Length: 389
Image (cartoon, rainbow, N blue to C red):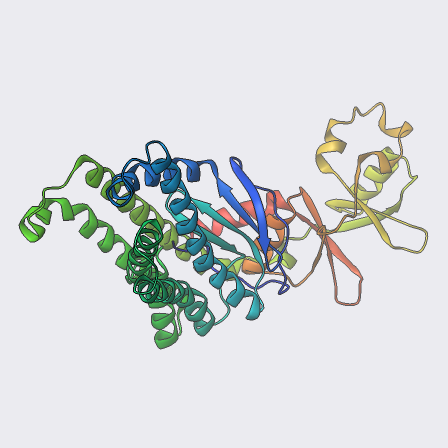
């Protein structure tokens, strides 16, 4: 129902990401993969069983087919959830953000959008469009209820209307990780000029919502006159845990992001020695030590970077073999994503590394000149030091 991942700047087009374990691709929308997790089949089964008595009441004597009809309703319901998530994704794309996937799971759906928003109004519109879509679907279903014939179709429309209105309204509750929490975050961010403050406020809203939800069974009988069932208690616990952990994670990420601007690639780069590919490894290491360089890059005859020498591979190579092997045997070819701007910093640096994991990256100036080599180990060390500071 909600979109727990914050939208982020990207190239404006979707990128294909590794499929999460236990998920299945069922299609795409606007070039975005649509996935379902194995947990979806469990919730579809639960919906089938829960909906069966209502179907039996309307169409007696269906036997096992009432569960099939319940499963069909589950599919229809999740198509409306997909529409909710697709609205997040399409608006994000229109605003220039990259969208990885839409996933349908036990608790509804999730739209994975890279990184964080650039502006509070982007955060607002990407977040609010989902609940508004659900409310719109619910209102359309309410209108259809008056014109469709009695029977299973009317029951399906009735369930669709109720579920979407509930999803839409509940997702507007001002607490992360719900969409309403992201709306609150955008409002606080816009008013204060501080994105992290907006996240903290919305995170506390999510925590308070989780506590209120967990306390609901204690007062349910007094308020509604109906005692909570075991199923009610289980659902309240699952949803409360989801809200609390999601809000807590968002607050933790906000605190980390506050320190990211201090993480700059340029001062972390190692001095680099460039050598031809066919140079013996022992000679390349000797030259690097003489030049006090912390990294080696192989280049073609015209000076174009060809590969980055792996520090781990050099260490693993026995010293007696180094004079007899070319330095190219311990290099990693310059693939896409291994070359970064020397000025990259903060969240852009973390995002670049997470998109293309590697041990070393080549840093280049705007004019293409080699600045140095950035080691992931050095980035991790600096990140931990910033976190402790």
